[in-house]
Length: 254
Length: 254
DNA sequence: AACAGGCGTTCGACCACGCTGAACGATTAT
DNA sequence: ATAATCGTTCAGCGTGGTCGAACGCCTGTT
Image 1 (cartoon, rainbow over the protein chains, first blue to last red):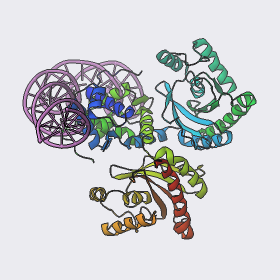
Image 2: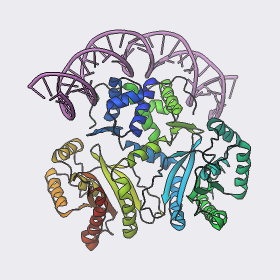
Image 3: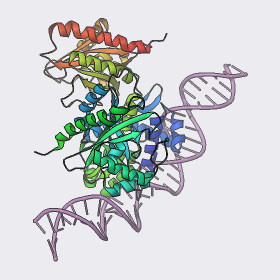
Image 4: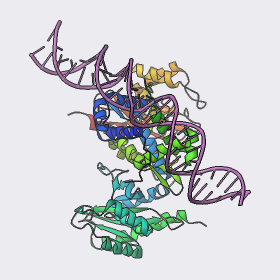
């Protein structure tokens, strides 16, 4: 995944393993955590109580769990991205107009991360959450981003993660992907034509800052049956490119 | 809470100090981090590279920073709260109707934390962010929550945090607060009448689950000049109580 | 009641390993 | 050229993170 530490700190690694245990299992017992992290019960206990003392973990009636300190940290990270605050209101508006799910995503450690996801009239539970990680080579936002990263970055990302087949249409060949990226640069938008998952189609645009570096991408996605014809080839690309231009105005120097 | 660990782990504590350093300073140098955390440069470096190897930290061109892994963790914590997903669409609707800032907040470690904040037509940057921590005794959401916590929890929270004066109207006397909490229980809503800050008025309601335990609170807030008269005494309380009822329907057993 | 099995926590003792300070090459400033 | 400061590596000391055993507290079973 990432660069190896020359001298990794073991107790940090168990701490992180404990965080992951708390993340995926809801209110696990100390023993569960110990097993998951591969340490003794007493060690797990010492880490947990240290985390609790500093407010990163709470133990309610049902056991230990991550505290809302992580929401605070997460929001802090999100706010520190260039694109989030500027793009968010535009994403909301676009979602209201189209009725589709609109995403803002950025690259992080060679993968895509959704900074924000919004569906126009949101009475339905969004199974889709912010912070979710996705592959770059098979999503509309991801390809829009890849199209504007330096060539060597792209290669190293593809080396690292490969192009596994996710559905019938997934692009699994580097050469095909490369020419697709060129096309995206030329026409100004990307399409995920059921490449990430069956039945899901998605149109995306990159967002560049004042120095012409990609700082993220926007996309609108919906059922393949809805995102078709004129809408797919004209309406959505036009709308997205308009939104992109409005957002990029904020990064121009006057 | 904040209960002292019997055997705190030092290296965990330096790791957490490093997280905090990265949170508040934008892309600090290794040396800065070391100074902030009170450790040697090499120690800071080892922690940082361990965090990087596991994806919790990235080092871009400008230095080390927290990765979006924290957004993922934060969203996970937020989703695990009972109230968030259910209340969010109602908060959005209420905000559109009133034009005010609507908050969803919960209690965590004796303080209030905003799970979500939304302002109707949000073209303006929200300086107000989710994850933000606030005192319970001087905010509308906080008092609504306190009014429904077990008496001993309330006392222990007040013992821990006190009632410091934040503005002219802040309630700094326990007895006064206690009778206010009784009143809130009776009439079903709370008011922050410029108690948290000058010029800010706020109306809140508690949200209870099927077992009549508070799981959070909602509030609508705005400039004191706007939140007055009928609006303060009738319209907002009525609207909020209606929203509360709709939300609580989801927690009733049939 | 008495028991067995689960939990979270505390304790003592050993030796891994986290910590420091010094040294390194790479940058940038003077 | 010189100096200062950066991030990183290294060797070695000694502390403190680790484990296993033991404890008290529950819950369910007999």
